[in-house]
Image (cartoon, rainbow over all chains, first blue to last red; front, side, top):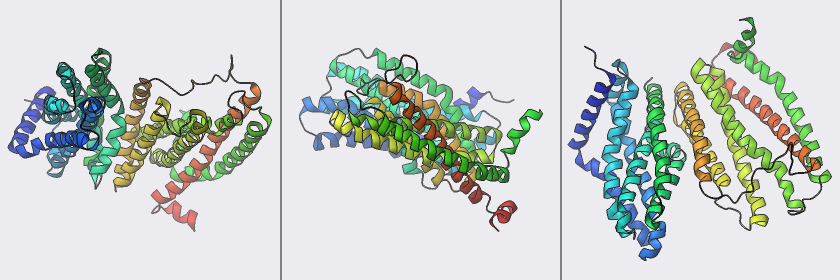
Length: 226
Length: 244
């Protein structure tokens, strides 16, 4: 009996999660990176919390973007090298669904933990305690959109010899809207404003990403495997 | 489907090579001629602006190249999509030929904008939405060219960069909207036709200059396309005949 696309996606998710938890050190790396970046800003900018508070949205979002990029390199590369992606493509199952599952795992393992641990960095940046839930929510939602966009560029750079810098070059311009709305939501949370408008827009981008990004990523991976 | 046969000829590299050779001089001549007339109209005939004096005249370069920077991206994305969907080698070559031209138009837009911004706004650079989206457009061009250069297999490079061009085209309106989220310093777009904000003596050189830059793009694009076709088809027999 042939499994449906949802079942295939579920199996890919379970497999990726299991593989990731076998290498816990790799799991923690993006998180550590994010914390270090957040620490460098007070050291280079100013130790004054009132001034750091103005820079906090930028620090949090640029840090989140960079650590998401760092983990993106491993999204498809290992599976492409050992032939797993080829098996996926030949399995007769929908590659779109399987890559969407991989992208979701990428978010579960980098975007979500990063959002959940962001309050630690945010406290150091002078973000008031009552803004924390909004900061976490915005980073979680924006991180999901970042993972979806990143999946496209990770797929596109599969064929390139040195993917690292290229991956950033492709992803950063495409990530501009997410950063603008995400940082705006964080800014509003810190100043006690209404965060709903930028959050709706972030949500809209995430929905658009869910609809289109896995298709584009599947097309990109197919090209890379040819 | 006899009406469609003209389209199929564009799938043949030798035919397009010859076509580009025939048309490039016409585009070039028309571009130079219209550019000279438009420059005369814009720099000498048009009266100085009542507010900006002679400094406004940079608009005759700035506005057309800004339009071109976006028009070339659309052309590139359409060519890339045609190449991806109908597996047309010539369309991929055309997309590849477009990218550096578009990137240069974008650089020219930013440079002329900065030169104008210094006396008018008091700063070479301000983080205005239109400037910012133009800068992001430049990065999109860089990404496209970087991806092309990064993949060794030419067919893979064609297809991967085509996917990127299409993804970028979908994303550009969202980028535009997101940077408009900030408030704008840039003057709103000027109406040229109908209830015009500018006098006709200032408008016609601008429109002619825009046409001139389109022709210029056609010219440079055809030359680049020929070079691109020669490079890609270097092992084909028709190239040997052409070169010999």
